[in-house]
Image 1 (cartoon, one colour):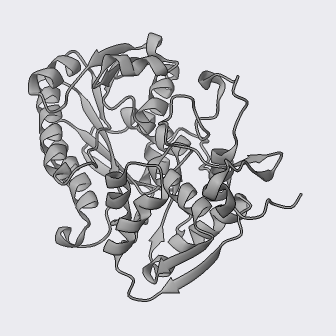
Image 2 (tube, rainbow, N blue to C red):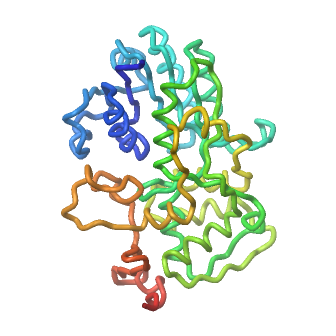
Image 3 (cartoon, rainbow, N blue to C red):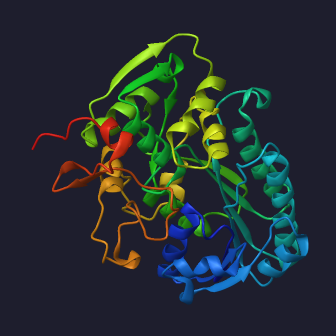
Length: 355
């Protein structure tokens, strides 16, 4: 059994939800942060060993991983023009640290890889695949989980969809958004699979992770609008360049612009699972995948402010989520509720849903 596990990127969206699940499973967790002070906003900080780690500093990475039985690698650099180089260097340092520490397993969360030549992948997806290859080439058994859009309040891809939907009554879509498909997956299922990866056979391999419900991007936007009580009109524009869409999208969201642009550039690929071995090999017996509609509904459920994060549904918002996360729509008693904040954003929500 892997007793002591190190979670890199513990303060990120996935890491912050994975750490409590590992603790509940009985593991001893070391959580890495670029700045120690950042750990204070997480309710579980006093239940783990918090260490400072700069993944671009080899000595820092070695010190953080020393003595670990298993390593979760959840670090991605989407900002800046040279994020691929940063990702590659960080992965090399983590792999080197794992080898030096005698780590028994690396678990990595990357992106689904379309059935295309590497040169045809977006820079974002190509970098994810390169990180996976660097970790696997270390010789340490590496289990790479590949997911497309992770559904949950606070997830970057979910927040981009939420905020664009709230701010675009007329959705001008490129033709490929009606044909290219994505297979979303609830964050609860991703976390369960990550924890389960510690008990899988010690053989390096990749697992596609999804909900089993692939759908077109335009269809996903319609589903969200329906559950959020938004009246939206979709208009398809042929020959609308992906590059133009990726430059316009950041204007409509509060997420970091470089991150949004990088993610949108990957949307014209089919992001659908080609196998579902993770269901049998990583998920616990009896685990039922969360359907897309259910995941979206739970992501929109907002508990009272006084409910602490430890008692909240991890599919919903947590106090520790990024400041830019969140929107003007929630669900209560099975119905959407609008919370206009005033100004142009409130007006763009449109009429409130009927009761």
